[in-house]
Length: 221
Image 1 (cartoon, rainbow, N blue to C red):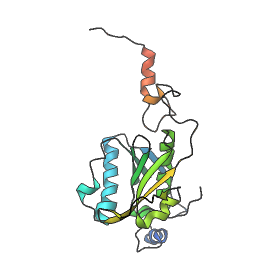
Image 2: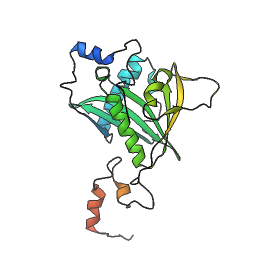
Image 3: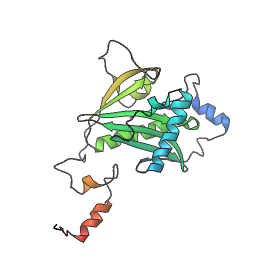
């Protein structure tokens, strides 16, 4: 997929976030470390997610706390965290419904905009959704960011007559279809112990597979 260097939360009034960061002397293309992305599995990592979203949504976009932290972060959500040199730089949230996944809450720290950070974490999110067997994805994109999401195959859903507005922004419902994966997790085809592995780490043996070597005691009473 061809992607341009457009980051999801580059300020509208700044047409060149890459040049802005370069002028500040914070980072350059020549010495840019690798961005690593992982699934959030600890309270400490979730606090990193909260910190990023507080900077982007609460501080920059003036979103009230109770609207940004909407009650879904602990309720069936999967968060991804991107880091560079040990510092948290971006996050995205995934929610899963019966027939589709919901991609949202993409946030990139100001100093990392314009370097493909958003692209990296979105691509990892789509890969994870595909591995879980989801072919349909849903997103609500701020109207100004529709071109960004189109680069990943999302297209507007023309099903509303009135604008979709929440937290002081107008949003566009979008959806995309992921290419089916032969190795996607499946209730009948996947090994049962693979289904017990940590979220997003299905390629490596998990701790419960090691426990299987102890055998069953089947206590009675």
